[in-house]
Length: 505
Image 1 (cartoon, helix red, strand yellow):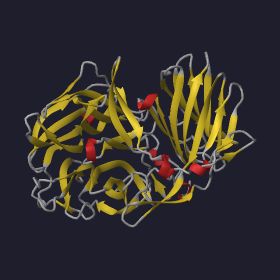
Image 2 (tube, rainbow, N blue to C red):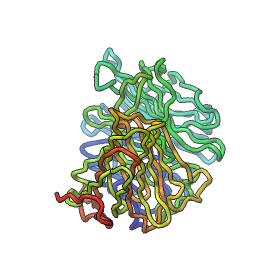
Image 3 (cartoon, rainbow, N blue to C red):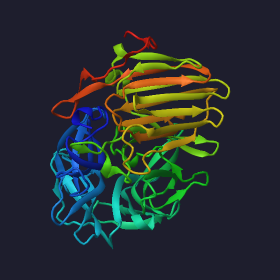
């Protein structure tokens, strides 16, 4: 896969290796994305913090390496906060610093927490002379996520959550100044035993939009100790009092995403109106080093706004893509395809588009949607009303011999709502994302399809509905990280074989 075939609205570096998102922060109208980056090659190593900015979370402007590794220090994952009160004394009240809290890995493998700071809005960074600021003499103490906590009485403090990876624990610390940290409590271990824990995040969300009913969500990424166990993410819902997190009796260890390629997602700090927007790495450690892309390797998921709803069984984390269709799609080239019982609809949709499905299911019916389809295969999204199961099958998606675990079918239960199934699907070259059940269920999967895999097919054994397909525009970033919308993606939908309704906009 060449540079010309890279995704449009999912961030990829111009060159070299990328994995976990780090230091997600919003400051003065700009979203900053830092990420695990190898400045010297297309494989993992020389871990540093890459840097990109955006004004709309869709078009990204890549910048020089923000925090670079040295012969004595690897720069692992971490977070960034705006220290608006200058509690760290690394800036001033008039010019508050951005402070990065990251994992510093020394040549002997010991992982400690360290600081870097910026006084120019996040573009130039200086490492704190007093590093490290937190040392447990551990080779597995990493991935600090820092946020400001305000108690019901109005007292505020900094909170850090980090992991002891092999112990499967999240550790909670507090600080008044980001430099001196006090241990508060730990969470875990629980869940699967053959994994390590990584990249935690802890934040409050209103239940069903009620700001008077706040619950806390803990995100944890888990990676298999052996090759047989892949990478995934889970969440817990509970309460937090500034010292300890208590799992709600109605909460459970729940998958964040039901695909194979969503990992290390964390949320942006500082987003206005307390919005919680998460971004993850669309990758899996089982085969991340084998993905057939060049000169880049690694892609981010789409950004997702998070909310929380109460269900009969407990709580559900809702993920909604932060995607303004009016700005990223081409309305004049939108295609509407009918879903007719027993009669497949086909169009040349290209490899970069957003589609929505609204399907009134028939009795014991099966819906099949093929994306990135061509002469040698497809990615199949299916729904079976008999089992109420939504699935994504990439066994015939193209290059599938990356790892025995790549050619798989992923599935989970999704209920119909009033007999209807509604889906949003984002197809962006090698990334396929599904949002179902009003965002309570998501799939994120990579697929490396041949160049001719630009066909979209939809069929159902019974029932009726519509698939609406909107091609993506080619983004162009301005010099300051803002977004301009440019030419249309190379392959735009057009009607094929007389099927599909062309909508003039």
